[in-house]
Image (cartoon, rainbow, N blue to C red; front, side, top):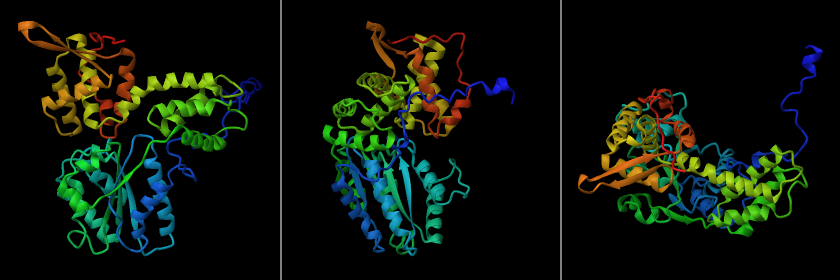
Length: 421
């Protein structure tokens, strides 16, 4: 290396401000050693899983509570504790399978995920096979390896069809699975009415227990943030009001711990970017504004796959036709995308309902104009600055990523997008 090259500083050599010690404790993936204000819920989940230790079957359970109330992290914590215990009990073989219903929307997608979790090397077609084939593969793997499943379903209310729950509940007892081989289910939902609305046939067959997670209050959020901050930040980098302000903002969002952690993390990133020696109140307020902007993308990320397909159809047609886009053109584009991804086509009425939901969420702007005796028409608008970002989020969906390479039937020369803002 020449002297000239050695004198060039690496762009990552910047060490003027030392805010972070370890960023991972601020991640939603982090499972803390100590879970705050959730002792009651931990004990309840422990109780429904404890029969596994005694070679029994877990109690099927529905857990409900608003976003950010700790449902997922508590379940992961208790399941990890269970797996640690089972390591010394080699006569019990159970595999946890995590399903997120906003990503795995169809029965086929869920069964595919289960098979690949049980046996990652097994060749499994993603589509074009009858459901019975997937079920038989699952029974075969479980019976041949003497393996039971603990099926953990996040956002269980988003299941396209819940008859999969009934099928799993009837699989044991020698029907499809050998004696002492079973599928236990823990479902999580933000819908507090989900337990009441479960099909009575399924409710009877599954014998669900019911656990509620209340929102965190501001004091609990402060304790959670203080706990993470000790691990994440260098000593002395937090101004006194930073954590109380983060907790106050998040408490207004129905006690959402994820929001509080995201707010604190973004504030630290802003301070670090500014080479500030401390995280200050102004960084919190700036972070709050940024999170509001990014909230739209997060909403899209959590939409069901069908809603993402409808949104993508709207974006592509507005890019092509601008304000002249018609509902028929959007629906035809939606059918095309469904055919490419081998996803079931919804009716025109249902697609119209999904468009109305996207409008209500302020992701698109669908305005109905009345023309007297000539009837009515609907115009579709979307921000030019957000359309490419929205498509990027849509393509992150496991079942839609192949569409990123698909050349939409749009013309960049004639593309006109009306801006809502």
